[in-house]
Image (cartoon, rainbow, N blue to C red; front, side):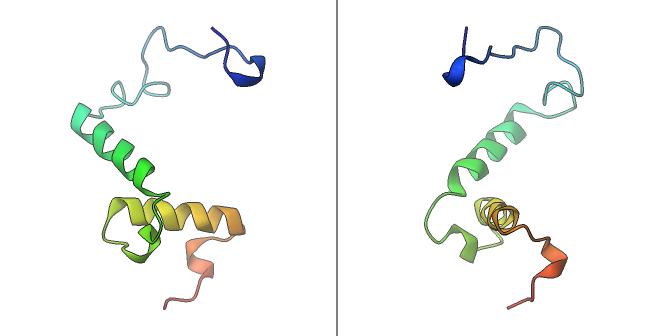
Length: 76
């Protein structure tokens, strides 16, 4: 199966800690929570609530886009 752009889809045939979240000790619940945080990070205003995992992911993504590290940003 090909992805957009014609690149072959990568499949994990033998789960290992470097290739598969579950093999690295993750749980289904934790994987679900991470998925929710990733989905929530694009919500308008998510970065305002750093207590929410979606807000934390949002701020991290914004810092990546700005080319900054957290320790380089002034606290507000």
